[in-house]
Length: 91
Image (cartoon, rainbow, N blue to C red):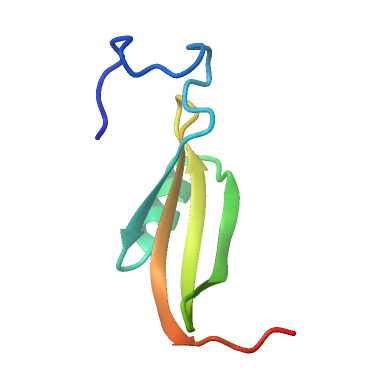
């Protein structure tokens, strides 16, 4: 849930940037339109797009991710699924 600031749920000092310590992840079919749109308006990337794998049970889940910061300091991770595969053995 997102709501306007009203004092009840504030967990720390309200100093800019307000979003310190919060990150939202949004899953999309593809991150390409986001990348293109941000580039078109000159919005800075917090981290460059990257591909990552995460172990989930006996599988690895691949994601393409892009991280940006909004004007209030909140981090927003845009992610698209690259599918899953059996996890590789790690020694």
